[in-house]
Structures are given as C-alpha cells and as structure tokens.
Image (cartoon, rainbow, N blue to C red; front, side, top):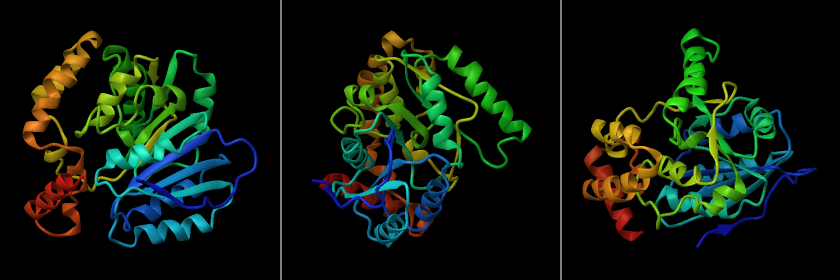
Length: 292
C-alpha cells in the first residue's frame, strides 16, 4: 500500500496541474529532471513523486529538493509493489486537479512546458481529452526538430488516428476522463508499451491532440530497448488496424505475445547502464515480477 508524506511548499491560488513522476534507483537522473521543474514559469502546480522501492539515494534527494520549493506542492509517496504501472497508479490516485501530467524521472522539461500546456488545454475544444508532447534532442529550433514537430503535429495524427505518437514521459491529460478510462492499471495492461494501450482506452472519451510548442528532451540512456518494445510486424499491424479493431489488437493479439516473451512492466526496472550484465538485470527483474 502506498504511503504518503506531508506535502511541502504550499502553493497559493488554484492548482490546476498535478504532475506524477514514478522512480526507481534514479539518483543520477532525478536531480536534473526536478531542476527542470523548478524552472517552470507556471505556478502553482503539484508534483507527486512516487518511490518504487529504490535502494539508492534517490528518495533522499527527492526530500531535499522538495524542502526547497516555493509555489510547488510536493507529495512524496512510497509504492513498494515492483513495477512502474503500480507507481503510476498510486501517484494518479493522489491527483485531484483539473489536469494531469505524466513525467519520467530522466526527462528534461523546458521552462515553458506547463505554461504552454495550459494555453493549449484552454484553447482546445471539449472533444480533446489531452495532449502528447514530442521528443526533441538538442536545439528545438534546429531545422530537423522543427520539421519533426511539424510532421508530428499536423501530418501523422491526421493519417494515424487514435494512436499514441509520443512516449509516456510527455502525456498531458484532463484528469476526469483519464481516471474514467481506468488509467494505468496492472489489471488492464501489465505489459510494456502501456502508453499505447492507454491511449486506445482514452480515445473512447475524446481526441488526443498535439502542439508544436509542447516538447521535452528524454534521456537517451536506453540504447538497447529489445526487452521493452514490439517487433516491426507488431508495430506495422498497430498502425494498420482501424480504431474499431484496436481492442482485438491489444487484448487478443499483442497481450498474449508480450506475455509469452516475458515483457511485463517490471522489465523497465532493468538498468544495464548502471553496471552488471544484462542477464543479471533480467534475472533481478524476473524475481521482482514474481514478488509483485
């Protein structure tokens, strides 16, 4: 069961955003992510940090950072059940604001991120349940990234409708439909690529939108993603199946394949860049999944 600590840094005025960051052994990456949130031009907002059984100094770094914040209401939660999906569910359960942002512990959020998200949410029609930001590495105004932002804002979403075209590190949603959809749930989807499956459920409540000024810079540390991705055939089939058959794709086709390959959400706990062999990391992950 998740345990919440006393929030720090009480904020004045209405809190419209709740940000949720799950983390597991992220002491090398979490400080930079938190610093990027300290630099947000929008105040106030709430941040829920969910420690998913870390054994490093990450939780203490989170406490130290929280104590220094002004205009950011920080809640520190412990979720001992291994698996990011459990940590996300615990953090989202604590959200009561109008809007909800899902973030990763190793992603940089530019200072305008929440301010731009607010403007886009306010301008969006009632049929829009939320936005997904784009990933940008380097200068966001460089030609290649300007082109990507244009394509992912104006082209791809028109061709491939009701699909996720951005990672779970950059989802910005209306809280009510998010929760009504079932949110992140190990009972509904205990596997990797859970942001894609979640978007399939969310689009029953409205449209996912994209905006060129919504971008983030995720870490590139996961160079080897064999354990957390689908095959080329599975990805192509995902894009080709019409919305009416997406339930079949996820629950009758993809889910059993992921289960057979052992691609449960707990494989995200493997961190080969921290040392140790990939085989050792995989064994640790498998044991964690069994305990879950």
